[in-house]
Image 1: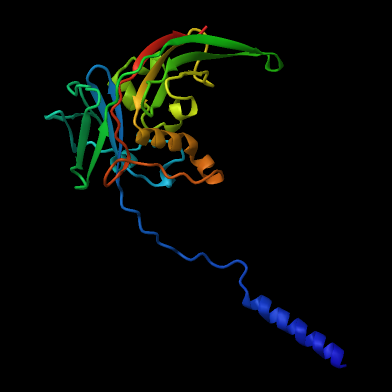
Image 2 (image 1 turned 120 degrees about the vertical axis):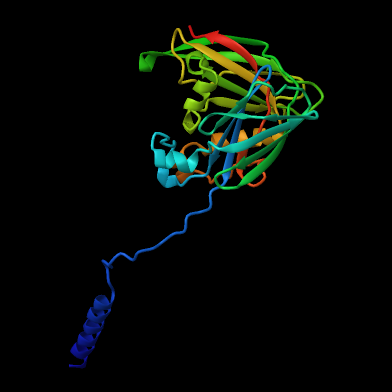
Length: 294
């Protein structure tokens, strides 16, 4: 009898505990304060003296995974900075960039002087926020050789098209390089085409190199994996000598990928030289070559 009494007591206790636990609770409203927006800078230089900067504000991941829908006026108003003071100072000169499109500021008067220090000041008139940054334009470097290559893949019954190039490391210093790949039809519009794709982060196609991996003064040869080219396309390939800070930024950016890879891969914090904001201010003078894919 005592045995059954213990079972009854135990079962009663289980029922009470189960009733006390709510397995389908009513949702509890939670208000999360919006994180204050910060200014984000990205810069583009075109020989001999053209400079473009994008000035945006940080945005919530809820706005989109890998891009910002700037056709949505409400989102565009939150993200794009279209009223700002953008100033570049260098070599005793001051140049004020003009607003070309929402978030895109440019000038055709910023002379590109090797080893010169450039200072940036941006003030967002709407929010009152301001940022500063400094960078150095490094000496020009040229591509030695570049040509189109193709490879037949039998098991895919397809042909892969790419390019191959070689350049020589500058002797005597620790160097870092950026090589970009763009389809000519995507960049022929100048500033206008630049503004169209500035928020499609995964469209960025580039590689970065350091002579620490190749040896001082040695040639650097590379064949990129390109998915942007097909026979008949003309690629614009740009080689730039960049600072170590910009190399670190681009390396981290390339590892970060899109939102999905950030969730499943290592967490990436992008370096920045923007005081009070994010992004990177860089002055580079690319050596440009055209390659027809064959």
